[in-house]
Length: 221
Ligand code: SF4
Ligand code: SF4
Image (tube, rainbow, N blue to C red):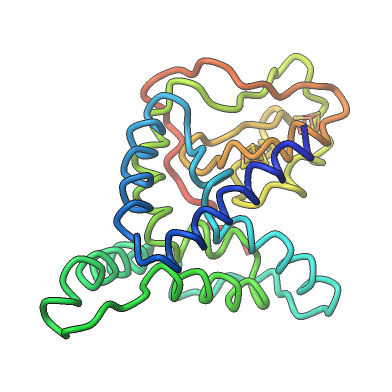
């Protein structure tokens, strides 16, 4: 499973590089638009499997931890949540109108890929996923209503928190009230990291209740 997921991510990364080298940004944006519709049914699969930023942030975070560069803190000014929406408006405007207004194409997607890697050298992946990424902002809106998403079997869960430690977007948390893990489909990238470490096989991809009450982005640290 793990190897298959890595292979899928590498294939999408190769496709992304191919399209960027050939100036086909619009094809990738079309794929992203289709992924938003798919997120209503299957959750944020784009984020977990196709996004080049997510693919590159995982090894970057590994390096950052090794070098002890990473901090657990989230900059206070990011917490209001406006940045991804401003970034989205600016990015879309530049992608659609830069040629007309400035007479040149600006590689907005490549700039975001570089930014995600640089930011992850210092901050947790979740900071970029939840507080900065303009594309993630849209994916959260659609992912919230996902019909299918990762779900915890509360009877099987022992509250060990192993899943929390491996989640790149802090979408899973053990609740203080019942000591059971709960997943936010709004934040979940459907990456299966939590499933792979759960000692009780308590996490599965299953049908959700709709609408969800889980749109909150975690505010800890
Ligand atoms: S790893 Fe499994 S058993 Fe442990 S808290 Fe998460 S869901 Fe529950
Ligand atoms: S909850 Fe599980 S599947 Fe969802 S993003 Fe976190 S680790 Fe990945």
